[in-house]
Image (cartoon, rainbow, N blue to C red; front, side, top):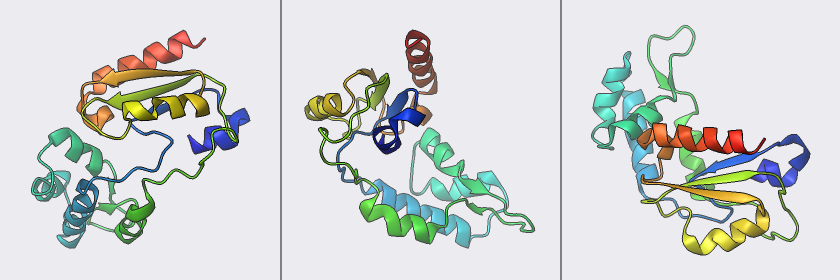
Length: 171
């Protein structure tokens, strides 16, 4: 959203997935995920299923675990898996991760097609922020998907359909 608002000439259309242009308080799950990810690295796992076994203690949902584990890589010359983004960096950014840097919709506006996809069981795109979304993104469309915050992982087919429909209709 920030790139589209600050540099609209380089963005043809925008799709925002369960995020709004407001400061958001992250759920405590995120810090919990970092703890699980740290345990994975400390255990020096060599296989994805070993990492998943550890992460099960921190997240029950398989689609969410699978999403988190997509960031697990094997660095060159290492037999152990580790996370792409250093966990110290990720943990240090948690306090500000939900912040949105642009405050005034009268100073930045994206006038091109925009799709907001929200998980109806998530709190990140509440009904009361829809007018603000409209001020930043006057051509926005809203698509609700019955899921939590991790829409892509929880409902991949519904997500794919929403994106394809939006992209086909914008031309």
